[in-house]
Length: 75
Image (cartoon, rainbow, N blue to C red; front, side, top):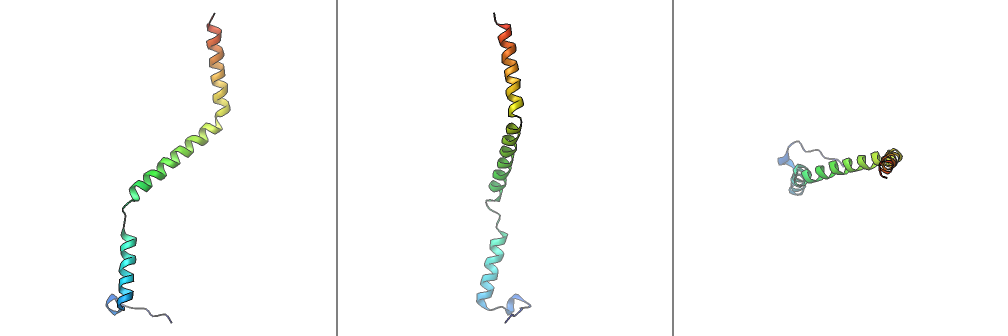
């Protein structure tokens, strides 16, 4: 059986306490700032890792070219 209360005053005490606990839990924001910073850092690190992985061959070739140029300069 479903009963809809039109006002908080009509709710039984148990329902009123549950309603207040849910409102309090949904309204809390402590810890969200650190979580958001952690997610941003994780996204940046993931994108950096993916970029390096995709460019690994190009980076290796570039460094080998630089090493070859340095070797050519040495007697």
